[in-house]
Length: 92
Image (cartoon, rainbow, N blue to C red; front, top):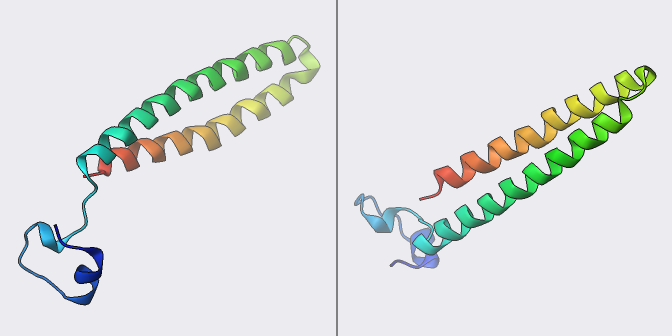
């Protein structure tokens, strides 16, 4: 395995393993486990959010508040989860 200092110092164009940086196989496994834990936590978070929306929406006056909560969740958390899943899948 080539060290980072050597890779930066010398340019190699042979096309082998020394030409790029790869994560260790253990890192990919750890990342997948953390992603699974993150997905489980996000599922729990989503459940609590829906329960909160249900409580708030008992009054018709609060309908706009529940819509705000739902759209904010969908915009931010969903995009974060998509990005995290894509990043872990791209790991080598």
